[in-house]
View 1: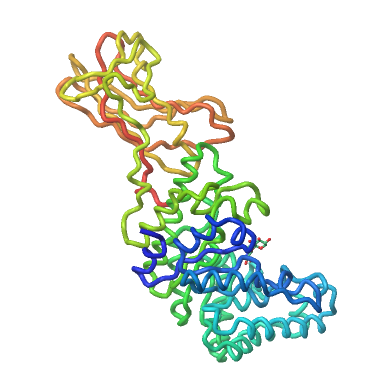
View 2 (view 1 turned 90 degrees about the vertical axis):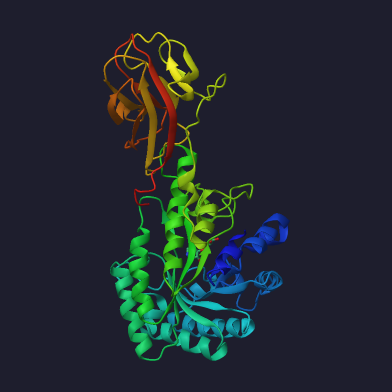
Length: 472
Ligand code: XIL
């Protein structure tokens, strides 16, 4: 099932920011956007600088191509954006404050008229607040305070009454001084009859550093209580800062996307989720913040774990990331990466298990079976590992599952789980991999320690999964 079909089961829009160049040059990009999304946002094509590079030159072709592709694909369009103090044409920046006000009003009127009837939602005002929740002291603010912000909504409504009008910003996903300030502003505007009908929470996220889904949920409620629609408008999830494996970074990203999407689905006022770009090849993060992989599709336009997580959340299903088994079980004749740091590793039937492992001729207690977890371990991704353990004979004895790490901090040993194994039955040893990684992760070996040499230590049913009980 596609994302758009999954979103439609909940009556929501799922959107993507679309750029003109790949849309006309890469057929696969255009196809995937039509197949997977039921809404689009021109990423740049409606901004003032590209639309009017010179006072006498208006360029509407790019957004028109995007609008036409959208109507062909039965996709609604989010207009982005009418009033913003960035991506202004250089000639406009050079104007006096009063002249800029006039030019801005003309730009808004012309563009809203030109697009009227074709835009589902307009981001009328973008990023007009400071982190402390006050209105930014821009050139236009110097002319009339926040009056032009309100006027932009009134004017847009008059020229395109069917469009739903939104205020859009970053850093307002959780409760904080900025979202508190916006709530006060929107409360006052609505009381005064300003036609602001939706709030866009951009949602440029970073694993481990931003707000959690529960904080998003609590904050969305406040705006919903004002009677506003809530839209998650520019979702992407940065992972480049995470030490460890690429798989783990993708899994951590998927966990956050699952939580973000589920929060939207659980909030009746949350009507739209939109991603800020189609694939890791088409992301503003690379050029602006650093090389990253923040989106749902990889460089080859293949769906990532985040894609499946978002789809599952839309369908009310559990996160499939949690069911992925990362530690292979050996078979007779195929050790699947398991090895030993003692004698030879043997795999065969033991104690009722079809393919248990045993290290023959152990001379040290710690020489049980070993498997690298280098390709799974990532900072900020909670994992749980486990094995079953049994002794061949003799009295109960202590056993342990241990992780040996070599990273930028050097070598260290982390205890995962421990217990007392017996010869009468299997003992499940399972626990979290709790380790703060620093710098380059060079070695991550999971291994089993048992009683001193001389007795056989049988190992079976290895597993390593994302710990989905730990919150994303
Ligand atoms: C970004 C675009 O993605 C880039 O291509 C462009 O160079 C700069 O703007 N918040 C917004 C978006 O509201 O308009 C910005 O888009 C990203 C941050």
